[in-house]
Image (cartoon, rainbow, N blue to C red):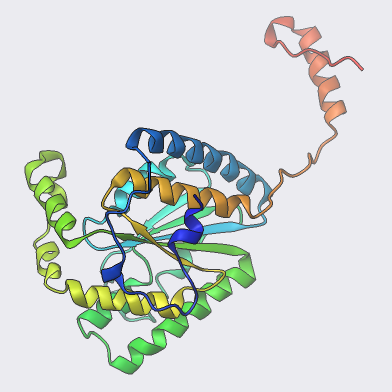
Length: 289
């Protein structure tokens, strides 16, 4: 199945998250078969990243958004964890500090946009500044409304000026699943550090966040910077969908490894001469013509 088509938010489409099943895990798909498919997709990602890095014509920005316990860290670890750190940068955006608040809301984001040849991953992102500000009424309504267009302009700039391909994921979990994951954190000493009182307070605004996300999808899902709503109650299915979408997106770039910038025959000859002078130094064999 092409998950890009299934989970894509079409530009301008109205989304009702209450009608999207976060428990979806495909038809006739088992966890075991999914794990095999994930491994295959991640293998493609690893190979495609090498070409991306070598070619240095494009870059990829992956935005990962979710409510608390939605699986942002897990997705980045299990899917993007196969990527070479030399060519990948993960940025986590927390509550803005005093210096960041003294600038426009995109000031802190732009320096972390990926360079050509690189993959940038945003764990939360510039979208926090339209989601949280709307839910908690942090800025006037007219200011919040203008931010959607500012985001569209920003992403358009990245695309036009640096050939940045932007893929945005919303990891969609149910309210019940969120509470279950909170309970797991309480019971697991290795994850106790993730517990925050604010997580439980924010649950009171669940419906407000759903409405805020629906507005974000409608106004900022574009042809060249689409949103995908990923059913995320089942972690293995979430990883499968995200890895497939990323691999397909990168395949569509039509990348090719660049041609050598040196005379390979001259290099081979020099290596052969060095090997003859010091036969124990290597096992390279001259190719017969």
